[in-house]
Image (tube, rainbow, N blue to C red; front, side):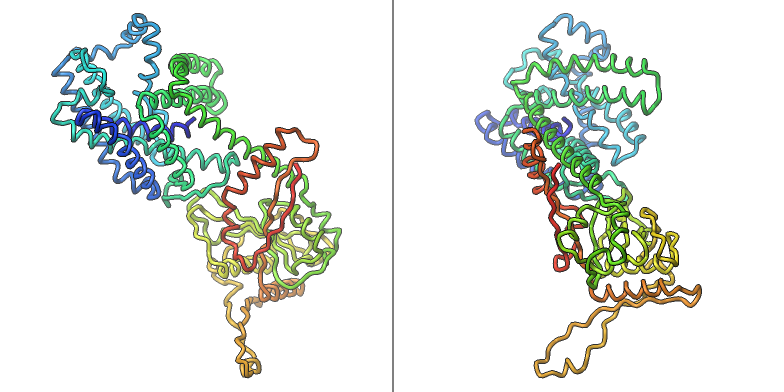
Length: 609
């Protein structure tokens, strides 16, 4: 529903602001100007998102201050000029009087009254961008008083003008003094753009969190700030929201229908939030259950009253947020179910260490020269894709590394904490596990730099004898014991000191064909004299050096999902069509995009779940 608000809020905010033109031009011209102007402003609003909240906020902050000052000043003017006694309407007594006298008409009007508080449900989005105290101070000392003064001013104006022509959609522009209408119109349009910003960023935050929880297909998340983790921009979602906003604006072309749709979405968000808040009161705050029940009864009763008034207008535009919520919820459920089944298959078919040990030092198949990097999302065990590969092609590299790349929620990971290295099986197997950690603002190095750091970290792990290494190869190494190893640049005495070109054979260069010989790259290790390194470690370092000279191959698993024979029709539709469609059209994991194509190898495997 919040994503639905992210579609409707920019549309109704911008469209209602532009609708102020109806007081300054004829109806014939107004209907041809209103929709194109709103569409152009919406396109500009979403085009600004790529610059990030900190840059856009610097531009928006003065607009908000001017807008709040403007509406509060006009409100004070209207109160003193038209009806100084309007302040009495702040009493809740008049709410009950209103509902008692108007009955059904007043109850149905609650759906429109709800628009006065839209935006308050999006204040949570600011927590990723600003501190809790700053939001409290800004709202209580500036935003809330300005809004109260603005609505009091409109009420004072209409208490003396009951005969306002009904063809005007907005009482706000009617209550503005005529000389100030054009300046206020410009400020209102700019303020509408600002007002849409919070819910758009809130939508980005929700999509990012859902994607991290495997509840939404993978999307590109751009962190626009190196200091604040919550400031994100998602290009795919941004342009999708823009297209939906344009569709709503062009399709409805009426603020009443947009208001009905926005009202139902907002009150639904509030109602669900209140229910979940009761869970927070009991589980997180450890309060009495009666406190949670009292909270839900008090706030839930008010929200249910507004919700019932909004549902009545389902066929008058309120169906839009329900349809959007249904589509997004279906996508999220299908993706989460498919991802869960895929993970269960990986865990159930994960190859045990005992299987690897039973193969012996040669691992039961031919070992070719070079280093094989097997990408996996598992931090323990051997992925099923590896056993699938060697079962069908019994050959692999002399040095095998299970590589797992993880992104952690910090801006930067220090170089000395970049790599976690461990051994899989005994030393003779030459099989390692390496977890590489990146912050969300870390720049992935080029291929040569990454390969150099990876080989260097493994070499330092071997030399240091980390993980309880034994000189004897009879006792296998337990999987899961990892050691933090830094990059080459993070060590004052790096093992890997140079990577230079070999001398080229002069006999080859002097041939008539003048054949160009590409020199090989060599990795040299500095072996300290003390402490003395045993023969086994020297052999291991030598094998690693020789394998690095030959080159690295990136083995990437590509899984395809199919429902098992005999599964229900619904499961077949969800897995075979729904999940596979989302998987093919979502982004690949970040490490796949950075792998050099010339040395990558995709291994396909069918998952029957």
